[in-house]
Image (cartoon, rainbow, N blue to C red):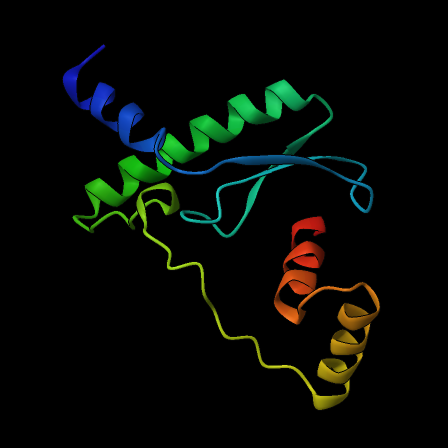
Length: 117
């Protein structure tokens, strides 16, 4: 394997890849949201993942050929753990009531709900 090919594989490996079943499409969908809007699909989960890895490598190579800079992988990005979420007052009120009924803070309740997504 050439040194350039090895570097491309190593860089591509740093990006998050997701393969999940889509009831709507009736197949597995593979995505790498950091690099590609689209994705790959098929009936075999392992094959979809392998195709996705190849597609990501091709995208990394294409970015290099175009002389552009690769985006920073999410796995390397530092997050504070805080973000502001704006919702309608009625939704805020409903969430606060549900948190109170569950005996939790609004923050704890919302975190539990987000983790379920």
